[in-house]
Image 1: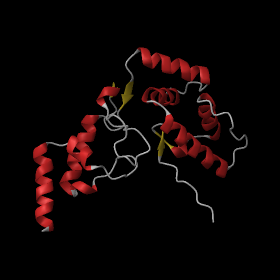
Image 2: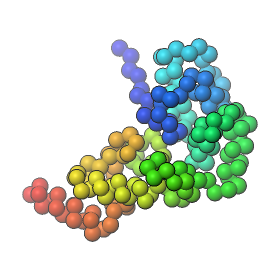
Image 3: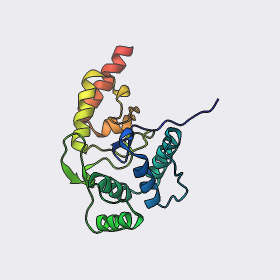
Length: 181
């Protein structure tokens, strides 16, 4: 019995099912992964998606944004094009598009790093929308049962506390503690 890794729903902010075999190969080649199989078969595609997921984890935020930009603009994805885009982003402040409000904002308006330690992605949502999402979830759920918008990983207490007011957070903690007693 073989165990296969599960591929996340999103890689570089795009659903996995939108990646064509050739696009995956081009991205991996641009990132310097030279051993890429040449025949498009489903099981090999899944393996390449896993490799792409792994490569995404190893990139800096600017490198990830560069790949996302090249994909979004349908630009040629080559190693030189990737390096050129990284250099452009380094010279200017990188911007990202929030996947909820669709506003283009500086990367400083997004959660730094992963939302949850078990996430395999950066936050594709600005902090304003993340705060609204968490506060909405707090109305309907226990504060310990709030999940990431992308991969459904449970958000750590510190993240929930960070994106809600102290008053709301304490009310939920006290209310839930009182209910449990």
